[in-house]
Length: 489
Ligand code: IVH
Image (tube, rainbow, N blue to C red; front, side):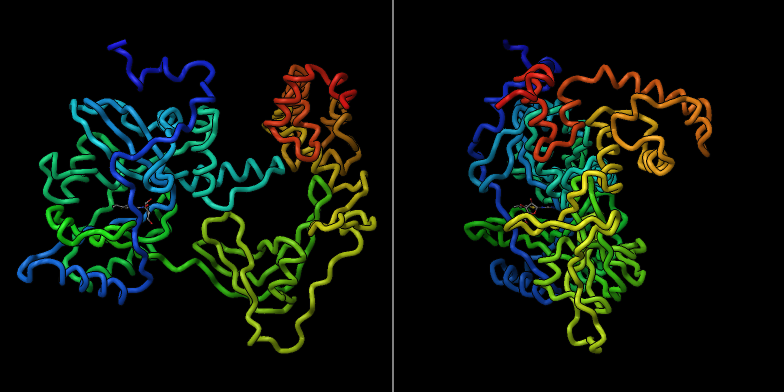
């Protein structure tokens, strides 16, 4: 037992001990939060308040760094070994997420020195991984994560640690607890020390002396943050000299020697030209704003989400309105509000559709629910959505059947239901445009192989309302085959 190491692969092989996940743990040092500021004036005030609390002749340096928008985490090392990772929780008691943190590739499990230390940082889902994850969810008809922060939080709380690795969670560190006890005199030195231990940081720690300098760097980072691989919601400014921290002091929740500066949200205004209604796999209609093209956070935008009809009514958004659109972290921009003062009187109220825009069938709305639905089982939009879902990665995982191929097969009348995939004729496929012999054979093999899918994937692939991956697993384990499942009461 004396040789057991928490970072040993044997701790993460096999099934996990679910009951032991996320045990509540008290922090040895409370995890503080930061006071917020929104303009340079508030930072000037912050500096003034600090100067009142320290001797006049004292020189000060400020360390400016990016504020990562993720989840705070505290790691404890004992004799150079990572022994525990705990979430912030309420600042006093957090949850033990060690098993999941160990799946983050950049996490240092063994330090180059046998020291004890506690470090703090932020768990994030890098933007590229976030977009990939949401695109996959979009394809599968699963609910999207609103932003990388939510995605990181959802991922860190997964009972199955493998998902942490799969989705590519990462972590950056920005604080060494009791750095002075390790002989370090400044925050910037403590960061260099962490880096020398191999710990991942953002590398952005700028030493500044005046509020003028701080203001310049705020302007710089306001634009430059677009080019960072992770989401930031602001900057953090910390007094660099550690020996002054106690003198400057703390409130019950925040240090007085540090402050967060929050970036304004990314918003631009444009004209709402029209609203179209998209029909999803379940028949649900989603209003889409068709916009005069604008640039937003570095990309060109001409469509945005309007969520649902009651949101449109609540915000009183009309066709022809000048609207603000926002892309905080979401991949799909949202319409935030309309500018009522700019109305000319020619704006048109957005009407709830009566008939399906795809099949013209009469639409229905469930009692008390906001969603309008096309209930026609044969609606082409629904059928194509069902097929796309059926073949998607978490379902039967049939490669070579992307949305475009599904649309072609459907439009050409080669398939009209999911089941038709299993009686495809090679000759008909080869006749299709852009389908070479090789890709046809690959597709047919992939379809053949999908017959070996596990029961849970088959259940999931059926796209039953409220039966996602997890419910499908539970049903498969309980009922063992489709026949018993279908006769279940
Ligand atoms: S310092 C006493 N530095 O922002 C030290 N926090 O709004 C307190 N955060 O709870 C934290 N980037 O989760 C610090 N460079 C950074 C940060 C940072 C993100 C988070 C952290 C904190 C929250 C406060």
